[in-house]
Structure formats: structure tokens, C-alpha cells
Amino acid sequence: MNDKQNKTFYQLIAIATFTKLADLLISAKTTLPWLLTSLGAPIWIISLLVPIRESGSLLPQWPIKQKTQNVHNRILLWRLGIVIQAAAIGGILFAAIFTQNLIAGILILSALLVVSLGRSLTSLSMKDIQGLNIKKGQRGKLVGIASSISGLLSLLTAVLMIMAPDEQSSTIIVFLISLAITIMLISLLLSRNLTAKFADDDDTLNGQDGLWKTLYHQTDLRKLIISRCLLLHGALIAPFFVSTAATNNDNFQLPYFIIASALASFLSSYFWGKLADKNAVKTIFFATLICILASVSFYIFTETDEWWLNIALFFILSLGYAGIRTGRKTYMLDIAQGHTRTNYVASANTVVGYVLLTLGGFYALLQTWISDYVILIMTGALLVGLFHSLTMRAEK
Image (tube, rainbow, N blue to C red; front, top):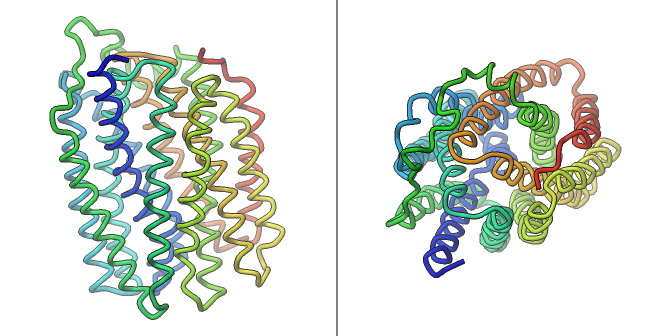
């Protein structure tokens, strides 16, 4: 890479680091389940956190792609998405300070939905930004480095939380949410002078096909979508680790879960990125295997009084899911380019968003009937996803 490419590479690492750190600080798998539990929100609301967080950022991407395909400078869309997210996190902060019980749950879910809408803009546009500025063979490395650095920063934040007294847990959560807003705004400043423009002649698949026609004709895309729908259970199962600890223990253990998530990201993301640059499909396979190990172990030991075991298994789950995300993102960047990539990202995310919303309602319903077996069902979906990954075409 020349000097300009190097500068852009590290600029994108800095931006990705800050946005990932903000995501970790208001995570639907750690911070928000603990916050809702402490505010007395109903358990079914916790079951909806990850589906709302993820589906809200995925469902709008196809219509957004259709409406914004003529916006050649994709950085403008990304900046708008960041502003929307920062404002919505402010709504979560308001709910955390001034409300409780069901009202708190509804307000936080509503604000989380708006956060997700902003994220749909940044997710769609950032794939274009990275694809236009970073060459194949370097993209997994970028994702991995950013995840590792954000994991380290989140780890330091959690250590500071542990040093604070237990009775200040509510104050700490408010601080985390406020910090997430600040970090989002910093990432906006870091985008100064960054450009990502499609060439005027880059009109491949530029909105010519509808959503379902695109899926029908693109075999690789269909297989990736099926894989994502099965493997997202690695994210859906995570809040149960945290809510179980919050229910069964009096101590403030949220910092330890954040440490587990951050440490997993810090230790593994660079490795997963390097592996994904060589073979993203193998990365997905091995990472899924790790998630299955964690899920089965959690199901077996879910009634244990050893609080550290929940955190250890959450660490293993986070380790595996970091690999799934890195492998999936690298695969998406590498199997297409230009507007074709935009079509792939938008169509895949929209379909997965519908599936997530459906699964969220399904598991919320199951939680009231057969709560003891929900984790086992999710683990079964991961197992199917493991074998399905073997059918995906190598991208390199």
C-alpha cells in the first residue's frame, strides 16, 4: 500500500474501533439485559433485545439501498447513521435515569430500535467504504485489528467498573451509556477528509433486480443468508447467560461479562481476521464449533451456583461468535464488488432482519412455555449451521 492507502487503512481502523467500542458499551447481550433486569423490566423484553437490535438494523437496508443508490459518496450516508445512533442512545440514557419497570423496558426497546435504524445506514455504507478503499486480502485484517483494539478499550472500561463499589452499579451503567454517545461523536470527527465514491460507470446490478430476483439468481448469496440465519443463534443465546447471572446472584457481575466479551474480542479478532483473509468459510466453521461447545456446556451447567462458570462460558461463546462475524463480513466483502456488493449486503441484511424478528417473537413465546429447552433449540440451530457452512463456496 502507498502512503495514501496506508493513511486511509488506519483511519478506517480508528473509525471501526470507536464504533465497535460504542456497540460493546451498550450491548444488547450484556449492558442492556443487566440494565433492564435492574430496572425491573419483564423477562420477555430481554428476549427481544437482540432481535430488535439486529433486525432493526437489517430490515431497512434494501429500501435504503434503493433510495440511496445514486448517492455516490457513501461517507455521507455513514455520517447520517452515526448522528441518528448518538441521538437514540441519548433516549436510552433518559430511560435509565428517569423510568422503571415496564415503562423503562418499552422506552429502551424503542430507543434501541432507532439506534438500529441508524446502524442500518452505517452498516450498508461502511461495506462500500471498506470495499472501495481496502484491497482483497487486507479486509479481514482491518476488521480483526479494529475488533481487537475496541475489545482492549472495553476491557479497560470494565476493569474500572470492578474497582467501583457495588452500590454504584446504576451510576456505572449511566456512565457507560454516556460514554457510548461521546464515542459515536468522536468517530464522526475521525471521518474528516474520508471519501468513498462509486465511479460513474460502476452500475453493475445497480438496482435493476428486485430483492427476491437477486436472491433467486445468486447462489452464493443464498447460501450466505442461510448460514447467517442459523449462526445468529450465537448472538440470540448470549443474553440468557447474562440474565441468568443477574437473576441468581446479588453481586454486580456485569463488568465481568463485559470483560469476557472484550477479552474474547481482543485475543481472537486479529487471528480470526488473518484466517478469514485466507479462507473465510473455514473461519466460520471453526468459530461455530466453539459456539456450540459453549452453548452445550451452558445448558448442562445452567443451574450451577458457580457464577464464574457462566462468565467463562460466555467468554468462550464470545470467542466463537467473534470468528463468525469476522468470517461472514470478510466473505461478503470478497465475493462481490461495487454495486453488486451493495446489492448483496442490502438483500442479505433485509432477509436476515425478517428472520431475526420472527425468531425473536418465537423465542419470546417459547420462553413462557418451555424456557428450559430454548437454549437447547438454539444450540441445535447452530449445529445445523455448522454443517451448512461446508456447502459454501470458497471465496478466494
